[in-house]
Image 1 (cartoon, one colour):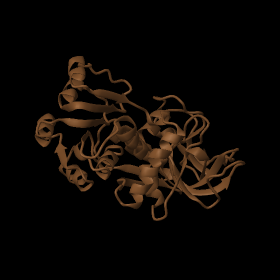
Image 2: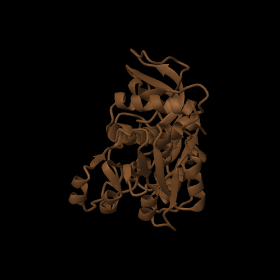
Image 3: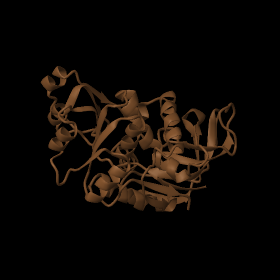
Length: 331
């Protein structure tokens, strides 16, 4: 089969598109003909060698959507021809997804409802499960509460906005341009703040009438927990899922006198059952059109190196040239 892979870690140009052995499904596994995949920041960190775990040679990509092409012994949930999606690939022992085929344990594969496109499913996979885990598994978000999320048009942030609205929460978010502010509002954000031209803290206070934030979903490396805690309501929950090297000062007094909670999580630590619960809601909201992943660019698998370059420019260097996810299709 043809695949985008690398044999050494390094810059995006270590990725090449060439022949690669076709994986065989083992017991309890399915082989999926990949119709769409997507790029996540973690993919670029792994390829660069900044995050361990890659077993070389490594096919890039964690997310996939496609059709079950064959099944291994003992598979009971899926049959050949089933439409599926998944997000937990490119970990040790699991092939990546920028390839004609990928193999996954059936417990990590999710059914894809009719009417939902392959690119849409690939774009919502890892980011959707991440958004859901933070909002519901960690913070137990309830209708009527107020959510704040940084980056309301980003991969995770845009889905936090939509999921929070789907359960009846109020949403405040930030964006870095007038265009992105408008897009965040179109996704359902009640208040969208241009962090380049407005004072975020003052805007949050005004939007909540001083009552504070119930759930603060931090998609960026936390730098100022004091300001965050000041803006929280009593019994508020702060969720962090980024910033491996971040070492912010912890304002203990603000934290305990407000009965706050702080949750940290990494999506890949969630087990198959936990991710399946996320997927059930994601599928329902996709069918109901309450969830619309933003696809900023579509590329071919053979353009994986350029896709990684574009992702890095926006994730690491804040180029601002990408809104939403990069989705890849065969070719």
